[in-house]
Image (cartoon, rainbow, N blue to C red; front, side, top):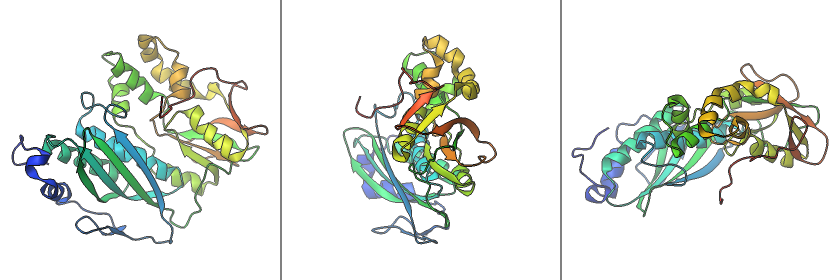
Length: 319
């Protein structure tokens, strides 16, 4: 979607005119009874429960405009929120987005951002139901995701039981590898660099896991060990991860790790923003999931091959 004049800015076009362009000709999914254009959106909630999650992206902290296009940023903003809904065993139905940017931001960039958001929302069967546009000193994107359990019980972090197996669906370490390549200005490895800009959550697999009896689940946003740590703490168990089961992930980032000069296991075990799903199961996981560990009795912690991991375990928001 293009503006009439590529030189137009948000200030020049005006808040409501920009919003009109952002929402024009968008097809809402059936879960949205009333979309943008009024004081609030209206959504259908067939089973009477709504799953809600909120996340925020800040320029220079969560994305860089010299690395990513606005379309990429829009996709990433939706993907990371949709993954949280998936991790509850639900399906995303709608997103509400607030966007802050400097007044001299080209209006075309805001439209490209919205296009990216709609692209990703449609991949998971959802839409953008509403939002806000404000002036800010830098780009800030806040997304609230809403989801439907379709009659299922939510899968929390607190249900893992001793004797469960631990399995993952999706890939690990790719986003951190891409970040390191961008940060160190290392060319090549185009797929890894791309995966940092736009993650690929395994849409639909959260519901598959819930239907298969997942006892606990989360998405890998901060790092495999960090996020498993949340399950271990909430469930009061030990989780032991086997590196023998993660060789494919290590091999996928091994050459990039050598180019950067780091241990590839640091990315596989501690790298975040891949938005894979990891869950505990009392029985066999669904097709496509890989068993990577087991749940043991003991004081809550995460082990790697039976021992404590001495490397980084994942992202810290205030480091």
